[in-house]
Image (cartoon, rainbow, N blue to C red; front, top):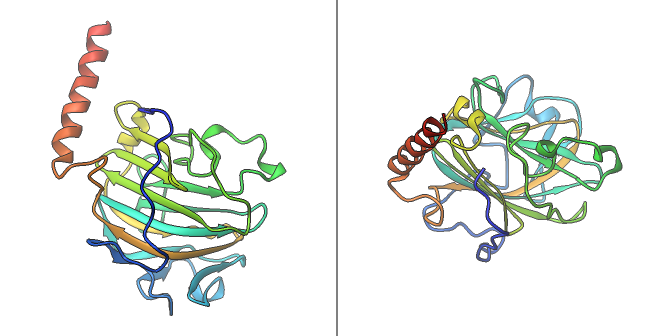
Length: 232
């Protein structure tokens, strides 16, 4: 994993604002653009006061209406004490987020006693069971958190409350090379209450990825293979 010291990013757009080049994924009125997969979404999801809410009832996860490849996903979320949820990235229709499928970014109340002994790759902001969050910057339960997820090729960058907590690629984390580079987005139902707002999506950001990101990644992976070859 390529990690430097903590990076602080610029201030986020005001709540409700859509940055140039971005598209809203939630209209604040209904579940348009999202589909329940295993059951009727209305049994476990609702829109309340302009927020997208998982009620905590056992039920379906929400899948985006379309697939995405390279993107920058931004949103705000709020957990209750002990809360647990996740964001699915580039998953197939059934939501598989394991080898041969997509990924999940964990959303978790890290401060809860019951999560004390989790693996590093299971804490908030981690690419679940793949790449750990290097910094733990969650706000207290009941407060809003911001998150930004950059995906381009097999590189992933997670910014949590303005701090880069994951900066990983398949060269340094080979498991990422075994995950889909295109698929659906998803909001996990972990039978826990969670609130979302200001979900929006745009192109990968120039601070990490240029318009020639694929060329850069091919070059990076080639150099990685060369380094490994010459070690023998």
